[in-house]
Image (cartoon, rainbow, N blue to C red):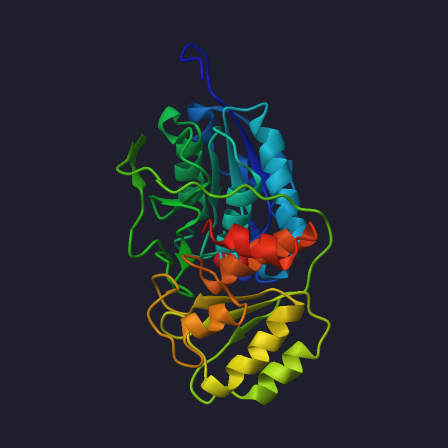
Length: 323
Ligand code: ASP
């Protein structure tokens, strides 16, 4: 960015509570969101665009891909891009952008936990902080960022961890990579891991997430496997372990479609520690694919994108090895 001219930012609206001033629907467009914050013009020349206007639980894979394409396109003609979004599936969209919208230009997502008509609405403060980050030189090359509650998070790490308080997002165990204080944008860390670059080939591959725990029934798996599914993500306890008697069924399914297993808690799936039936070594030997560092929600996005490009099982395995 040339220091002698004002930065140029594009705000893209994609629905969510930040765009709501009643309980019914996200109706505030990007222009209205920006108009409510005169401070934005102190930071940059702002252009506004509308992408979608939905509660984020209703977004489809094609909406996520459209948000990514719109952000990438905006990044070609602006110094920074802000995307306003719902909190419920913010982590999926942020991760989709991390996979599809790779650019040096800052792309910053933000959202709100309280509607514009509620006391203590957090949307304006979040949008202001996100705009400061998008306009900052320091944000260049840091990948897709999420700004909530004055914290700057890296998209591949963030998760919504609370259903109603304003401090609802966490990148535990790593934490935010920076923060915004007054008008200053501070980075303490930079993401070290490169995110693989994927593409979206259209459509919406059917990839359910199945959570297994004690007493996991083969019948449940059979019912899911009998449906018209293109892939399956398992969310498993521990390092990726399932009941012994479900393992052969999973192995048979994994011959037909990609079956990815993720850890339900924090950490990463193991590869070489537990070899008992249903342990991660057994699942891998049966052809299941470990999600490594990804949780089930992010693994599902990656698998859907891969399947949208008709990736076969070996390519899915190869790609997940990069996470
Ligand atoms: N239901 C809202 C959504 O669109 C919640 C939010 O934005 O916080 O995700």
